Image (cartoon, rainbow, N blue to C red; front, side):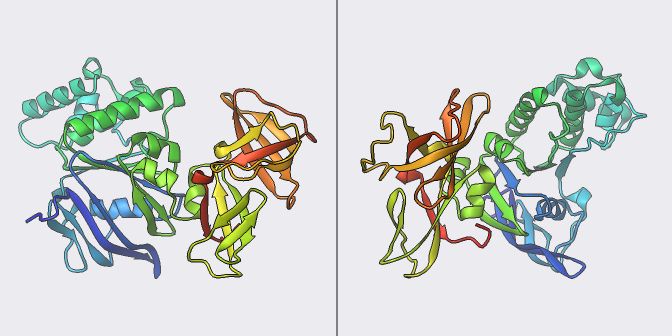
Length: 363
């Protein structure tokens, strides 16, 4: 009996390769119709986690359940073909010698005519019925991806596992294809677990993001929560460039060029990192270097000297060397702003967008 209501549930799952723990105490759950992105750098254990769910890899400890039934544990291993799990990979793995219809019908059972009929139904769902008699080499990358989707849907999977299936597509096609794919999967009520190393893709596609690092899930939440409330400095840096102000705690406070910050829970003498994204820094164009005036929301402005400015299309990135401690700070400015190196400007920051963490060893 499924008491949790989860379509897919992982509980403290561990996996070893050659004695090395590559997936560590991973717990995660997905509801029907939910899209969760397993996000993290290459080699962090994302694909191994997917293969364990599919039944391709065996776990060491923990449990994987689908609709409440144990599929994997230390004592149980249900074979992949009995899990009702669909798989989509970067390599679409279409059979080149089979037609589009034959590729979609390949995993179906029953009379040939019924299998062909079901394949055509699925091709209509993905808008490829006119290519039913074509072969994979006659299709574009986006069309091949949709054939792979139709084939994965043929078995009416309860769960769809997707390992960077859109990374091989042209950038012009990628957004449209993945939006169409997820809309169809949601319509089918399929729980989707998508592996990606691209934060922008995860933010665009996911109902929930599970951020993974070194085999562990370090944070789970809605995209807005994971972005605006990062678990640590590394989590913040995975989503965008960051600025780090390093300072020492004294009396529960740290002093910086931008004023004082609370450092709750940190002992005196501890080093902390105050993290802020470049888009949350503001250049004060009216001050002209005449001196700082504090405000409740932006604290004390600080003076920096332009080192470099780059135009990025819709915004400009300006790098400063701060007078206070010669540290480097980046600020993002909308539209075109390309001040010459050596120009002094005053900066202020959004204090409500700053995060205080114990100092990172990599900072």
